Length: 440
Image 1 (spheres, one colour):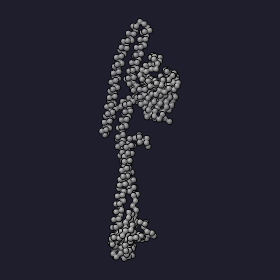
Image 2: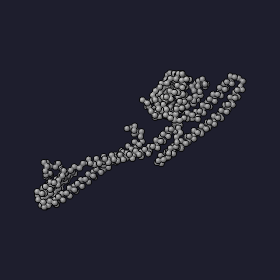
Image 3: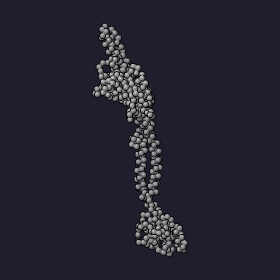
Image 4: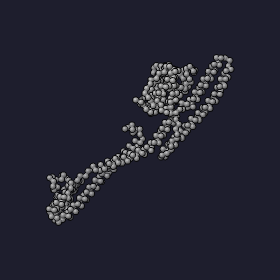
């Protein structure tokens, strides 16, 4: 229940309304129950007195036998009438109901002196006794009935259930109107965070929600303009840099010393490689590609199979089917960088998949020397390498891990490096919430 409370805004809204309804019903019941019981007692007392007066008038001249039969027939489960020569009960006497073997409960009719010669009565919270003159005789009557709050409780429960049902239905409809645009906003923000293009949110509903949707649309437009402007600027810089690099390459051809010429040409080519890699990274190639659902196990398997032709030491532990929403081309690029690093510096790459409570983990383990603990985060910075040489035999320009982590971030995940002593394990962690299905 606590998880549902934390998870659902609509559920919290409905529960809060039901609790408010329950409290208000309880307060109303406490305030109204006493007044209703008093009103019922007053109404029944008035009806009893009216019936006694009418019966006394009707029996004014009736014979004793007829009066006895009429009074006996006039009683019910709560009322008894009888004719006597004097008012009964007298003060201090016990009220005996005709036709019963016992008496009323002790204290049912408290002792009170008779102050009215034409009508005497004894009453408490649940009963009433009176005597009304009928000709030369007295019509005596006793009424006794306990009025409980049970009927009020049943009415209150029925009323609460009906109100709760109406409130729950209406609250659900209203809560969905609030939650629906918030859900759309959450989905759009998640897509934007992963670099996907999302159509503008509809600016409808209450004013607060309209302002929120409008603010998100403005933010999305600004981010897209910023990325587009940066890409155009970097493309222009890259184009401008290629021209002097080409000029330097042509001039290097005229150098007489072959050793010097080779070193200069190698430096120019390294600069060209760095420019191309930097442009590829900055232009956002890591965030391009269509998002769709693929079998993650099959994707990694096919990548390892393709790379095994160049790196025979790659091993993949095949697992269960994992339908995952991602950008497959970008994810393959990130994994390719991790596997290439493992093969280049660790002479092995053992790839496996696992699913934890919150993440989908793709691990790439090698048998290399590992990385010093104080350098585990530094290697993700662009152009950072743990060895000084920069040649095509030992690697690129130090952007592989930067690009891989950028891709992981665009999917809402991260890359962690863990020393195995010996060896290093690179873990690509992706959020489990993007997992469409987990086959048994």
